[in-house]
Amino acid sequence: MIYMLEDESGIRNFVLYALNNSGFEAVGFETPSEFYSAVAERIPDLVLLDIMLPEEDGISVLKKLRNDKITRKLPVILLTAKGTEFDKVTGLDSGADDYIAKPFGIMELISRIKALLRRSYYNDSDDTGAIVLKNIVVLPEKHEVYADGIKINLTLKEYELLLILLKNKGKVFSRDELLKEVWGFDFKGESRTVDVHIRTLRAKLGAGGELIETIRGVGYKIGD
Ligand code: CA
Image (cartoon, rainbow, N blue to C red; front, side, top):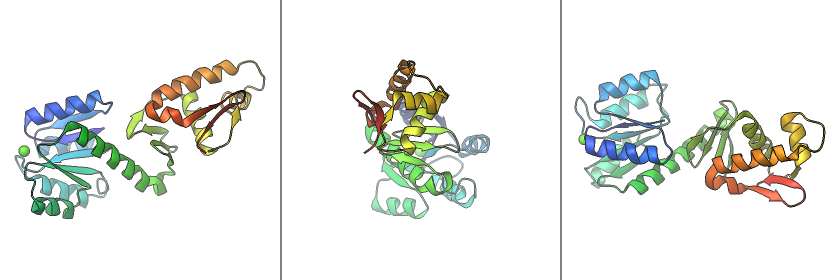
């Protein structure tokens, strides 16, 4: 979930529309007070923060986030019309993870968001035991899977298949082995079940789906 705090409705609606179309869940807020109420309800994965706002400016909002134990490490990208070096330094000094000057291209913003989400999962990996392979991140403790920074919903069996492949990077599993590991079946002949789940798993992983290799005549593996 991405929160965007931006008082200009034109920019806000445009960015939210683009993010939602790119597979992100994103919600916008016009004022800091609305934003704080939402954060109290649910901590987002990332915040897009405008600087010139009603009530208080974005730098002040950012400082409050950084001073709160719960939101201290929340990834924040500052958005501002004031694109001078001075503002950039101030923004980064106050604890922003990244900075983008208006007017910005939406594709650039999305690639910055993805990069920051990836970085933040890496940084969290000590706490969470995250398993990372290229653009795929699995947080086993939370049962969450991300591809290119976007959370994806897997069925339990798809999740278990991905997990066993990722925990054994480079190992080739036969269909029967996967059937036994994931489904607990100890008999041959149901290997189509594995193929069907691998297919849906690949589709859901998008570009990351290519990381699951079919080993002809044997089965599947992920990674080298
Ligand atoms: Ca503004």
